[in-house]
Image 1 (cartoon, one colour):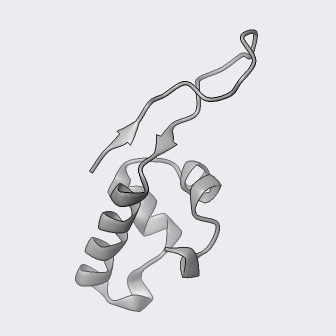
Image 2 (cartoon, rainbow, N blue to C red):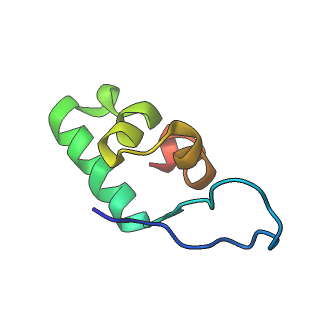
Length: 69
């Protein structure tokens, strides 16, 4: 599982931490692991974000809904 910390297309003077770029394969692997452990009903943005050790907001930028997982 990898989550890369790569610079995004932010302005040079932007304040704050750069956004994480999320590896789609890591998301798919985490979602599959949560599914294997808890079944379909146990799969959620929260559960997958926790598995990836990222915030829900970070995951929502890449995967907007459970059906996209």
